[in-house]
Length: 232
Image 1: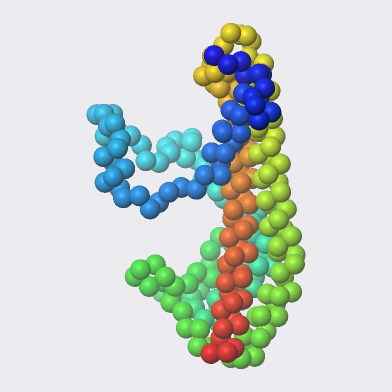
Image 2: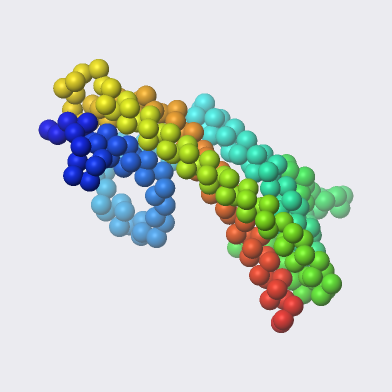
């Protein structure tokens, strides 16, 4: 067995390599392109598979729901201008949901809910926009570009710092296992246990960064659609 603190040829210790590999799992995208039958065929299924949960339950489910609400709250607060622009634009091209009394229904963030087609897409008519309105929205989007991209970059930076802190905590705990003769697996378990808070924090920051990036991409897509409308 190679000791974790032994320097490798490329200059990294075993602990650093283990931490890096573990941290890289945070960035791996979920592969949704594989055929479900192929996935099931490659699994070593047991009777316990029939009882396997596909979602969280009890307190775990409540914690996740709370995290998601707080994440949305933070996103709506930091990117309030972007959300306002998108909602004002949607108000012009979409149909709001109304109740039996004709009252418009709003979501928890104060934005109108909009009607959807059977396939889940929104009922939209972009032909309603006048040239003046299109230019107005382009102007608003351009004005928000710098600040929005800076906020998104800051979110990405926080995610990088959180991931680096997790790697450091993992590496330190890996090398400081109380049993000097511990196996790599034992060191992994010890390091993961001691760095778990840093890991979850890194996951949350990565999650937030991805959502921030998505807002900027959505805003840019609307900007492009407005520009295309001017020349069509």
